[in-house]
Image (cartoon, rainbow, N blue to C red; front, side, top):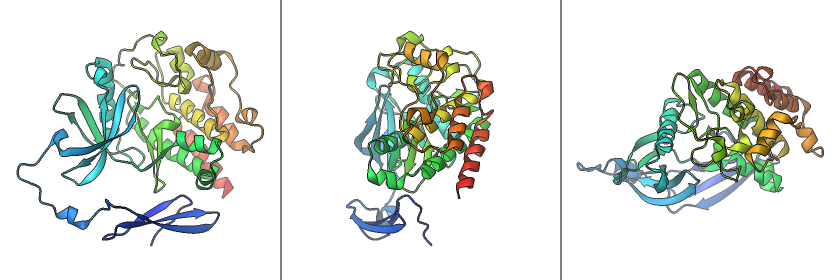
Length: 350
């Protein structure tokens, strides 16, 4: 039996070089056949593993740059031993001797590996290449991040609108909540949640990524540079960052509060929900001072105030505003409470 969701589903047939993709669009099941030259073959499973087999970084080949930011680069590459493509992450060369970025890189790999959950990306290996540079490998997720989806919705992309209704986007956010609840049960707070750190795959799976700024209870904080060392582009997370991406920060982080808890992630989820509802970012400041002023000295707008032309469900607006309370004590007291509110809304619309 094959379950076909409202989003796209791809079926792979063993022994062929094609794949059949189904998508449910306006109640109609659409099928298309795509050629795939490098389709998986059963002969790959029976390949002999040599006695003198390659290990560590030596077993990866066919590197292709996938993405890069100010801190690290992501490649897709082929694992010769397991005969599959994986994602390979490594720091930029000029940062490989940076103590703080090295610590954060190791923290990201180890935290992600130790909060294995259906909504976190599996980590395969952590090591150093022949030059001594750190790397880790993880599952290659075929799909898009929520930032790209929201951008496409904002631009009126018809196909994206058909595949990602508001109900589907809320389901994605509930899956994100599940990952964060599990992480917090393990003593981990994400602290840098944003649409770009939420991946959705072609089989409707959702993943929370980039745990490099996670707070681990009982562990010392990494040393940070002063806030003034942020780059002028507030949409980036520069080297030496102290509280993640400025446009997605929280009041307690931008104030530099010494004690934070899981309600930091509640605020971040509220910010993501705001963007889902409005297709616009909550914060618009161009400098750290402007963002700080927005967060601490002005009332945050309601989604309906930002996009009065949209029919935003009142219960979702209430959930969003509750999550975005400036003081943690005025928010949902946990990610689980927020998740329960979202699930109750979904149930009421069925």
